[in-house]
Image 1 (tube, rainbow, N blue to C red):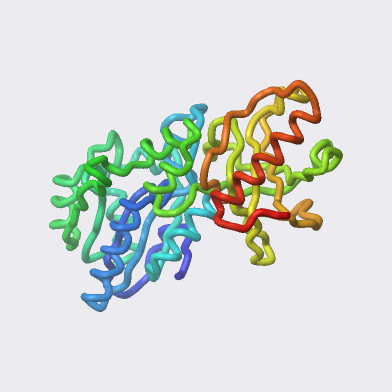
Image 2 (image 1 turned 90 degrees about the vertical axis):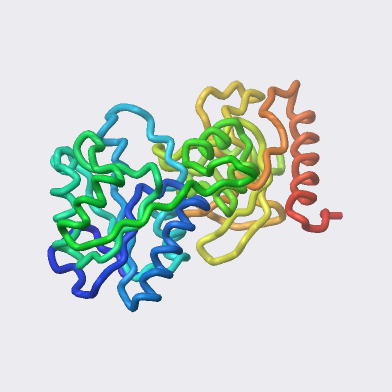
Length: 311
């Protein structure tokens, strides 16, 4: 998959089938849209391309509001790569771009790619004031030489899959439900930084994850997880998200205990898949009660992850 960081004129010279969207989460609906784009391109012997934006348009359209994204850019790229389009365009979104009409922006796209089909979701709109809805996009297509296909909402048990719905589930701590709509476990990526060492002192060392502040973090609690290391190793994990009230903490942390694993992860990037919330975060009467609960959490994580308990 080729990655382009702007809509450069002449980016491609082969007839193209293009999908356009924010693709936050790259959930099951997004996957269906991108797969359709790839399949149409292959059937027509054309190039398949996906266009998204960085930063997320909400950062420009609603400055100062928390983004609470489901995926950072690295995760979005990786998930789109799995769908095998020929080209991923990560176009900049600026105040200048937001002022363009849908026709003006589509003209820029067509100067970069000889677009023959555009595929979007049924609620798609683009351009200044979101005036470029699907009927308007079809009009522009007749002028610029492309057809438009619109995908119906992807549903599970009659419930539409959407980034906003998944975000609600994550914020409620229902990572299992979020994973069902994503088509994979919800994940956090981040740099491992040094903490205060309390976990190691009580026999449960933790990796403290510095996550992207624009990414949504699940509700406070303890989660059964899998941690993916830079080496490719996958380690069963129990992750605490919260303020550590037993130690009178006030700052939110994401701290992962890698079960039966030893090593140094400082200053390394890891990816943690959150599979199930085990319990709420709570304050314990002392260290002994906390340690007993962590042992129980680890045993429960073994069950969730389908691995034999340690003796």
